[in-house]
Image 1: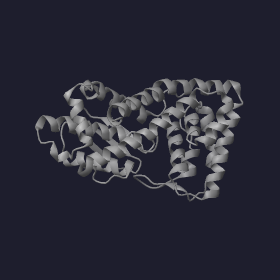
Image 2: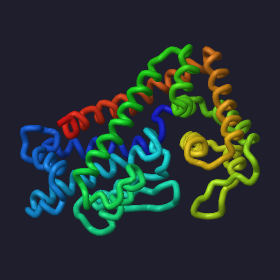
Image 3: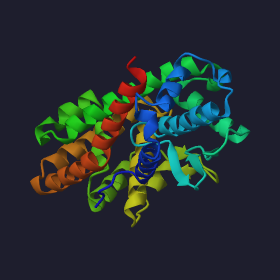
Image 4: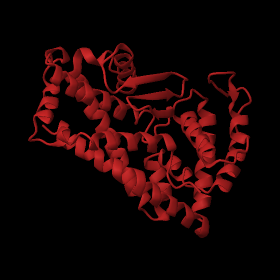
Length: 301
């Protein structure tokens, strides 16, 4: 069964938290590095001409860009297919097939372009380097939105099964949190039935030939991570694809009925709740606490 949620999300958060832990001065209000970062909220990037100052602010902005990317598509990073730590650089591959590399030791053109792409994609902020103070305000709102989402998911993950229907009505994304915790056998069975509802001309675009959606969901897989890929693509289908409203309603009803039926089975639901507890402890609580700390340290003034 799945105990760690979505692998890309885990990899990104582990990298982000370790990178931050190696730079404790960023988070010390009494240290010059923290005060220097705070100046980014008031001064253009071009004002930082001293090499040491440039090194600090560039390092922070590179890391912040990865943090913003980690929430693209929601709290489970569904718009990112892979994240690679290459030592002095990280690579992000998006669902559209684009791969970008961010150097963690410089401020070269590919790094600047990658950060511009992330901010435009996630926050609708074009060329953020030309207006960093305004970009940071937008990033603060973006992170606050996901801190609220994480708080809601934490509340849901600790709730009793009787609140499942209410939770899904308040936040449709809760359904995907549940699906990521469903045992593989039941999840496979669900997606076989789900696939039968999809028209044959509905496809997912990728690097090669388009993949018919009904074949993608119907095809049995053995690895847990591949089953979770179905959850990710299901999420994308429901929230990002342009599909007929009647079909969207039918798919939502089918998913809701499956989850409600699952919650009525005490044995299966106990398993789901155990998995939700693992996700809660391993992902949701640490990320919520981390975002709360960041918002307090950098965006509370």
